[in-house]
Image (cartoon, rainbow, N blue to C red; front, side, top):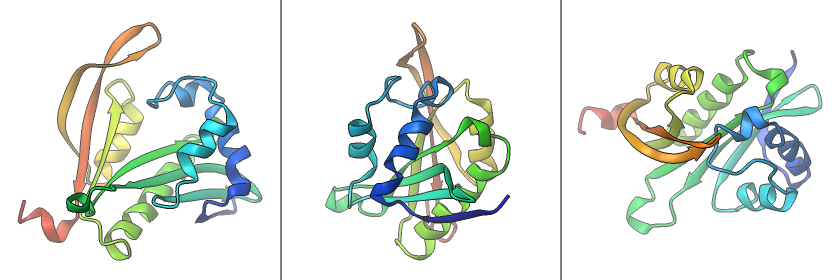
Length: 167
């Protein structure tokens, strides 16, 4: 596998649209299934955010986004969104994307807190996040509607190690 990471370009939106067209991807997000290409574009082409894509040969197979806070007192915080094409699951692409997002957050963007929400039944994602230093801060009861029923979500965060001792 010839995997490399780079910043998102507008020409990558069709590939992200393809990734989010899979129910196995959209069901683990806060979005509805069958996103339009315009919606995908509006989610990821925001110049205030930071999005990397994983490219295998010439195909975009995943992305990670750092959603930077617009609040002046929260500029040290970013939310995370990530998705990997179903054909590329289990190949370490999500881990590679998250490791680079953490590197960028710690060493280039001066972020201290990374946070995300994840469905409690998404055991693979929870295990990945935990292995990279994220901790469960809370379980949000009945916080989202998925596949015809309410489900719980974890709020997870990672505090940059040089600040974790101060927290």
